[in-house]
Image (cartoon, rainbow over all chains, first blue to last red; front, top):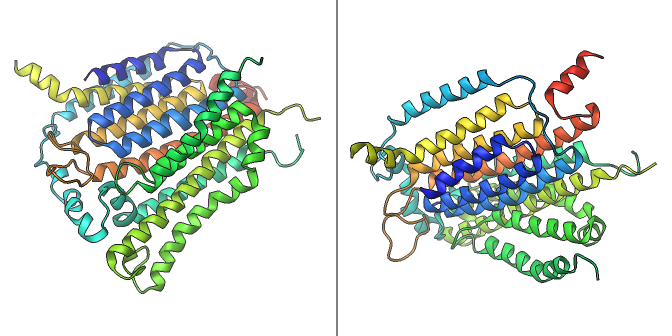
Amino acid sequence: MVLLTLLAAVTIGIVRTRSLFAVAVLLGAYSFLMASVMIVLDAVDVAMTEASVGAGISTVLVLGTLYLTKVHETPPRYTAMLPLFVAVGTGAVLIYGTYGLPEFGAANTPVNTHVGMSYMVRSIPETGIPNVVTSVLASYRGFDTLGETAVIFTAGIGVLMLLKRFGKKG
Amino acid sequence: MRLDVVLRVATKLFLPFILMFALYVQFHGDYGPGGGFQAGVIAAAAIVLYAIIFGLQEACKVVPPAVVEAMVPLGVLLYAGVGVASMFTGSNYLDYSHLAHDQVHGQEWGVFLVELGVLITVTGTMTAIFYALAGRGKQDEP
Amino acid sequence: MKIVTEIIANYNYWITIFLMVCGLYIVVSRSNLVKTLVGLSLFQTSVYLLFLSPGKILGGTPPIVADGFTVYSNPLPHVLILTAIVVGVATIALGLALVVRINESFGSIEEDEIIDRLRHE
């Protein structure tokens, strides 16, 4: 619970700062806090991915972009009242929606009873892999992982096409 | 004495451990948290650290951009190739049951090759993006 | 006392919605393009929390089969969120590359200045 409050505080910092360099550093801190929250929620694979991807690669990308553009944000020209109302209104509607969610941590919700839990008992006899997340990712839902690898490949090709300098042309 | 001696020495000490940790996460993804994505990102972070501390030219000598750009489609090809090989053995696409002599070993071989493909693509992509971003700032060519 | 137990049970979801609303506010209101992409990344990570929270079972362990444990948390949301994280970073990388090219073509990364420059050409 302390972690969640820290997370909210870091987010307020990201909204209010004007210096983009500080935003990059705060984004790294936010990723680490998010990874800690995920560990408390028993999601160790996801926490490792979020920590390495969010705090490692994302920070490097933002700093690389700031190296090629400028570092300060100019103040806005008009006050942002309408977006604030839209955001707060959406938040109120979503909070009203959370009262329909099942109790936190119960074991008999529809999420936890169907095919998700059957993977736990089927994993060792059929694949012999104790880490159920890896076996689901690579074997039971391997087609999704093929699509995800294709998405990374497309992003890499896109960035190379946009940013690479070929030869000595200026 | 240069001002960045501490950074250089510390990087030289840390880099083998980072690469070893990436390989550990990749191959122990079956028994603990880990897998292809995490290992790929950690390996790319090691190369990025070397490029930041020692300069882009040094990093391009150790890991040439041509190799990195060849790695990007190679992983996807490996992944799709495992699927096609499964079709040759008579099962559906990406069904690893008949790749080895019994089903459990077939699944283990399939998962191993698939995670290797993911590792190669992720490392190649992240390093290629960093090389593209860092190499763009050279505006002093006539 | 019922309000306190209700707050503790729902605090998780409320913080998630607060993060989501902050991300939405940054995307809609800021005109600096890099800040907009950062807001998009905030929005995405709050959705990951929203997905993972119902999958946790109180008293369970991470979903790695080991001797001595019988109650595990649900592995299916973890798999979906793993894919979502990687797709998110691919989107951010491509977006930042586009921002760099926009800066080279128009000379600035603020939406207002770019629209002015386009209007005066």
